[in-house]
Length: 109
Image (cartoon, rainbow, N blue to C red; front, side, top):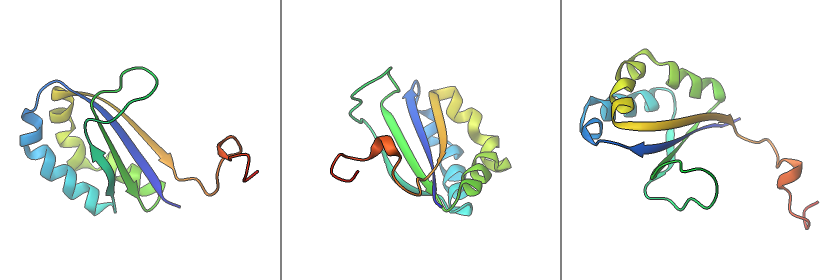
């Protein structure tokens, strides 16, 4: 079952976007089967506390692949570059095998 990594970023500086972080992260994502399914800014945040101006969603073949990317030693080596220029919240979540009961519309219940 697929898994997702969702990152919300508040950008404080852009130097990291021109650093090796970009190429190392892209290579690590590819190594672990990651594909960007959504990645852009600004997004339209409609509820909740401010999560920043950029949201990125990566899809992985399985949750183990998402964790393998996150724990990849080469990726972790460059993470401080991103952290120095942004405040980031990252979530790893399994894809749903079927809609959750609370997510079903009345017509499908």
